[in-house]
Image 1 (cartoon, rainbow, N blue to C red):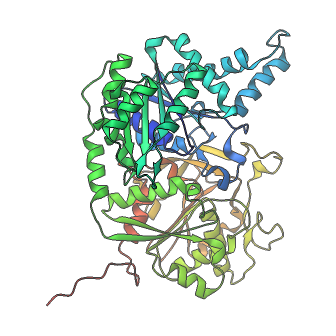
Image 2 (cartoon, one colour):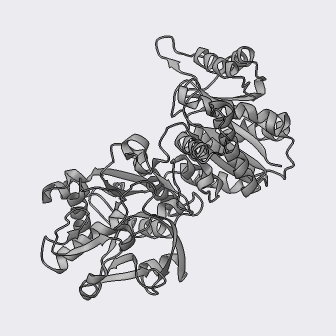
Length: 545
């Protein structure tokens, strides 16, 4: 029978629940336990797939094609698991399911209420994940903060689980903020006390309180929180801000949270093995020569919109013993040649990630042109492949007309066009090509060399694709189609000949990268970029006699 750990948050949002959950999963897995994770999101959207990146950040796509919260990306990266659609639950999904059942007559004419019908539906998602995953521990994060009206059904459901699963099989962890008052130069515990009090009003007594802070937390404050929140001092876990989120599992392990969980849930475990993780942190914190990567996107004002891309670049930089320096470039600012050169002149590599809509597209095309002409390593992801193809076609046909029909439906050269199976689709939610699809690689290409195998599986999220009517003409000018669907119908990866490393893919490799195992395309992209000499990109060497 699976054990359940429920993680709630208090005081403010974005306090770090997702990283805490991922880190707990890491330290449990290091003891030989199997772990699965679930995120509960209180918003009424069915999923974040139709939400603006400025509202929600990145949409993380699972192998089975679910569009989910970006926290699932952290779960996968930290714990090294591949999650499914069962790992992301929203209020929209819950209410849609309950209403559908009512319309079918499943409730036999009864009055439908939040308790028990909505809470039962929520609990069924917990149990479904446990049954399908067979995991020793199910970690469940409740999005938002205690006191949010939309989160109350989720909190009531997790309260009921102590009775449903058995008191000894459920653990409640509360992550809260200790704010620092500069005027009095002290951390304050009162917001934590109020947050825990809100939980207790609902009927949930936290077993563990993780205290987030930008400053060290003295023992006296742990004593105070223990007294006022009725939690043993050993279960008040300080979690000060660290230089890298990948250090959090080691901090929690040092504070003996792992052993506390093992004891409370009576789990049968092996000896802890975090050697590989400790080695990762050592390498990450050592000073290295920087590698400058320009990320040219349309949502760069919110870095979380490119969360997995940023982390994948970090993973690859660690592999090559480099410090990653991302130059965040708003693609709308790349208009005139002098602007392009000014913003990209120190970049040793250029990456163009995914996105939707015409805004900023011409700037991305300019970035691809700059990379091609100046022999700067380039990695295009989804939209980044499409703009690379557009730019190459404009060069090949000596015309500014090549485009995608997404941006110019009447273009004379529709080198990127709507997928045939997307033409009759009217809705937006979960209607794209989503999840894992196979890709067959061509030997002797950069892509083939990166993967070192013939057939791969990668996650997709797109509606438009390379137009096969232009295959022959673009290949004749030097575009290499280095990855195709097994039937040869869909172009998955493109490269440019006579270029150090200019590769773009229709899929999203960033979703498969891990801290200790960077994705092959990111690894080889950084490998090519680190050796590119650009003015201002390398540190000045000390003078010698």
